[in-house]
Length: 302
Figure 1 (cartoon, helix red, strand yellow):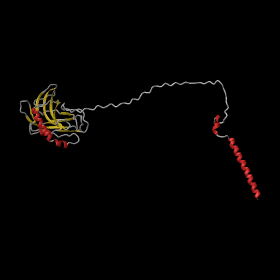
Figure 2 (cartoon, one colour):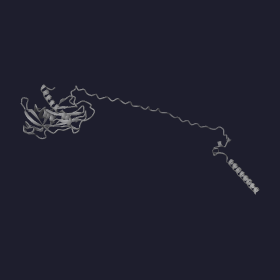
Figure 3 (cartoon, one colour):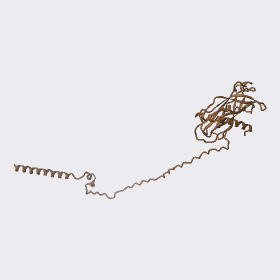
Figure 4 (spheres, one colour):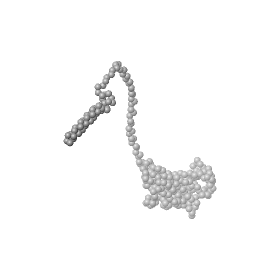
């Protein structure tokens, strides 16, 4: 639950984001865009009663190399660099041994078309352990913050850096708060300029967005209708019986067929050859008689 002061500050940041929304939507390429480190002025306190010191941190937020699709996870990397000069440096208040760890609890503002609400705040935690002891007044090591997002629809998302708390203490312990840093009043436009832009590619949105209020309706996933499967009936086994019948002749008889065709090959050979011989002989005889008659007729004329 945000306090009234936090709501006012969030409203100012949102108005600054809306001012540059048109340029963001038009200028974003087809893949996730990364932004060069930008200076953002923060006011950091070492205790709740102090007035705080202004630091101009170098905020480096980098989006994913490839455009995510709806319902997939997109990771934004947030590196808090040392303040630029002129101005104080972000230093270690007391020595940090290798048995201690540095914890950062950071907040970002996520805005853009893939989200059902114009803005939402997210708290993320990062931890780092120094490889070697860090002396007092040395440069303060700040862990890298990873922000995981799950967009619900296509569009452009902007991840804007916001407040953070830095704690130092032994591993397994809560640790003591060294710095509580908030974006300085009037520097919301600097934070908006340092935002990382993430373009959500075309896809089918499913599931819910990480950090989305629970009142946001979710798109139900349709249940697939089962396809009826055609079952081929298994044929019944059949039983085949073989019966051998043996016939024993009781009387031997022989019968001479009357026709030649019924005896087998003789019928397929055609008419009897003697017929052809008889016809041929008749033709030869007729030709001989005719020849003699013609010869006698010629002799009588002469």
